[in-house]
Length: 396
Image (cartoon, rainbow, N blue to C red; front, side, top):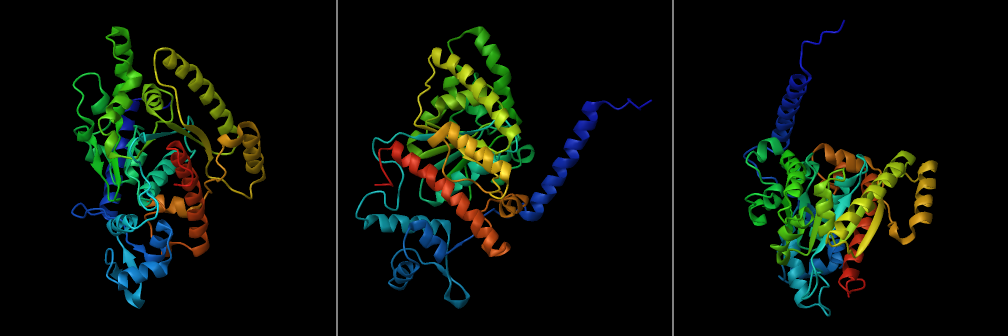
């Protein structure tokens, strides 16, 4: 007969403590406590691609003493910090023939874009997609706020936050949307090491919103749970061009409130039958529940909804069939480009980084460029949708 003397809650707690300590030690090894996490510098070629200019033009600016001065390394190679890139954008925008050429964000009258990234099933690449989208838009000159609504806090971890050590006294969006004594949303926004990118990290406190909302509904005090995220964002709407929300992999009150605040919805899909079947159930539940929210006065309008195929392996026959099936079913609602499955992306994640953060030299050239081309194509397609929502085509 098995020994059942040890309580399962105690055993799970011991495992959680040991794992947390090891993760903290891993983080301390990667990023010592007295060191501030910083973003690498970018080569002049990378910066030229980001700005849409020739490398020779950047060299001429440097030689003429115009714009920021890059760091010059061996062989005359020039490297720019994220702050330098933003300064270059500001400098070039002043001489641009049309507004928004180098600073492509909101103009007067443009609404804040709120993109919710959702999926019911884990392993779909939801957090990876949200992180790379937020970071690429920041590199492209947009003012971005990333919000981690997932209590598992993977988006936070990618940006250097370990919740059980860094958020001991709160600091999540829950603090700004709770029913009693909410704090101003500015109090929970934190700067990241990416220029133009701020974040509201997550932790298990977010589950309190799921627990408290049923009680608030029973009390019928006139408070609508689905308006709380949107109302909180309203206080900082002028500070950002785009908000990217990484939702939890469940259709609870947090996700429904985020969807009510959204202007656009991005659904990540791994192209396998079980994942698509799960997504079907998720879409049915979403439709039913948001229909109730809409009938209660929630804002169900949106600019666009797209499905993005993630962890895609072009040589996999069944995956190709599933992608073709989705395109035949949903047409233009499936993004034209896909996020490829890549060891470069997964290897970067081991060090709690994205592909935009790691040095190209850490991978074989073909592997890196293939993954980067995939990510940039997907993010570029999403950026085009945002520009169209502002009434502009191709940024014009």
